[in-house]
Every structure is written in structure tokens, then in C-alpha cells.
Length: 425
Image (cartoon, rainbow, N blue to C red; front, side, top):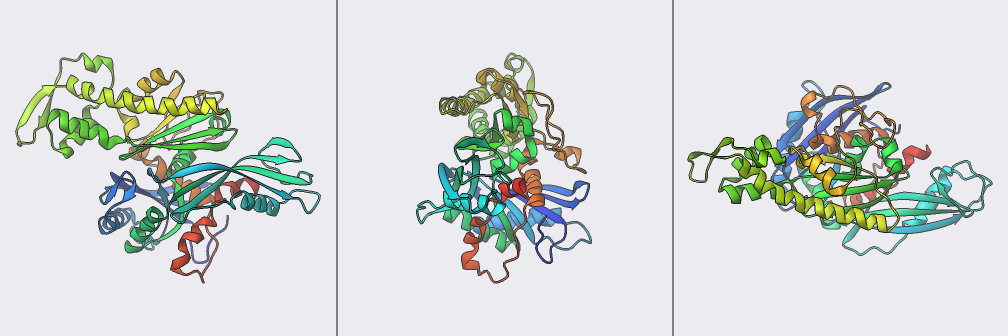
């Protein structure tokens, strides 16, 4: 594993979310990844994953990192961060190169990926990842790792993920104001998938549905590769807002009610039970518990309906989806997995980052556990932070001491093949 001069084996993943900042601190050992601490802190200054107040976001980051700091350990300075939001756009591309020697080398793979990434990019867009989806050697398709094979012409199909330059730069600025250096920026669904999916699920065909506070991100995998991503403008805050308006509660009280009583089960729809809430006027009142379900159910059906449209579109384009894995806070609503399974007509499970996947597609796949994960953080809400730690353990930027701040975004672009490098090394 490459390691920058001066860095220890400590890896820090920072999930900058609309509703929370989550920091995972881990140490990489020969036996695996040891989680040293995980903290979660309320977030401010973001809307739907995009920074709208740099100072507020920087303060939220600073507090979250401070809480995650191990006593007696060196201050946290280097982090891997996730990025998401409606500004993230993706498209397919293709590249080809001639093979100079008789066998395909890792350098040839680098060249062909660089060829595929040589596309026109508007000035307001930035490439975040260039992800291979298929290698072709002398017309033979379906190659996952062409290194060592003999051929004359190597081609690659790639999936290019881009983000708005302003969104990328503002995230970096927030971290810098918090006293941090960003080692890499990773698409959040990629990080969540790293923590939540088994190798077999990625191979057979899976949809990862990551519901955050501001948006829901979907990542489709097939044959081991990421094939498509989509961002839906509905997240956990929409559920909370519906409760706030419908029950006439302050937003923070609606959030409490959602977490404590949120359910999509028909049995709760018919429940005669009562719950206590604090209304806008400060008065404590009893309301029927079924009201919560009646309000949450239509929004859940709307979200899952949009997910179904994305899945059907991928079926049409030749990327079959055989199951779905739920992560993010909304997945914790009681009955959300059952409702999703019913509406999508396919197996659905909740992705817990600290437990081996219960692979419903075949035999259990790769064990994605990390050691030392506290039980309270074995939670879909923390899948992105755990995935960032796993990503950081595999790919660390090489030293570039002469790089100026003005070229920082270009520095990030050069790491775009990092997810693939761990395959061909």
C-alpha cells in the first residue's frame, strides 16, 4: 500500500452530510482495519449535499473531527471525504490503445483509461472518477483484468463521474478552514458500497440505495463494476418536514418523532396507540400513533417509485438488477425494507457496515467487516464513513510537495483511477 511521507497507518473518513458529520478513525494493520473511534455530529451549512454556508460547514467539520480525536494521539490533519448531491452527473466513454509489448502491462491499462477520460469537459464540471466497466482485448469483451494477457489492441469502456467545480472547491475550502487536508474526494455511493456490498452482489447485479438527509443516491453494479449512478431529490429531511407540517411540530421534534416512532407497517396504520409530542406552541399533547405512519407512507411510496423507474430504465439498457441494498438513515424506518421489497418485486436487505452481508443472491460473499466497530455504529447511517476508511486503506495519494493550492482540483482528478488500481496492482 502506497503511503505518503510523514503519514502513519491512521486513516480518517469524513462523511460531510446534510444532517450529520460522521468521522471514522481507523488504523490499518496486517490483520485488517481497526476502528479507533467513530463520532457523529449535527451538520449545518449544507442543503442537499451542497455547501451553502462555508463558515457553518467548517465549524461543523471542526467539532466532529475534534470529538473523534483520540486522546494522546497526533491531531487529525488528513481526511478522505465523500461527495454527493444533484450536481453529480455521469456518462459513458470509450478508449483504445495499441499494445507496445506482447503482454498487457499495468501501464497499458493506465494509458487506455487515460485515453477514455480524454473527453470534452465544460469549465464548470470536474471529473471525480473514471471507472472501468469492461476491458476488450483484440475484440474479446468481458475482461475484468487484462494485465498479463497477450494482444495488439486494448480497449476499455468507462463510466465517468463528474461534479460541479464550485461544489468540489467549496467542500475543500470547508475542510481547509477546519484545519484539514483532503487526500481524496470519493463519490458517496461508491464509499457506501465499499462498506455494504459483497463481491458476489456486485457481480450478479445490485442496486445500492443510499438515503441521506437531503438526497437519495442510487448506484448500480454488474459484473463487479459500477455501471450507473442516479441522484433523487428526496431524503430523510423530506420525511421530517412532512411530519413537521402534518402534525404541526417544530422540525427538531418532528425528527425525534420520526426516529422514535417512524413506521411503515400496516399494523401501525391500524394502531390505536397514542404518543406524546411537543407542538409548536410548546404544549405537550397526545396524538394517535397511526398519524405518523399515515404521513410517512405516501412519501416513502413516492421515493421507492422513483427508484423503481431508475431500475426499470437500467433493465431496458441491459443492466439487470436482481436485488437492492438499503443504506442511510431513511432505511432505518420500520418496515421501509419490506415496503421496498414489495414495490420493487425483488429481494431487499439493509446494509450494515459492521456485519457480513446476508447475501440473498447466492452464497455469502466477501466479508466486509472492520474490527473494533462499536455496536451503536454498526448502522446504515455510517456506511459512507466506514467505506471511506476502507477506500483510504487501499488508495493513498503519492506525495506531491510542489503542488500549489490553485491546482488542488487537478490533483484530485489524477486519483480518479484509484478504485481500479487496487485490482491491477
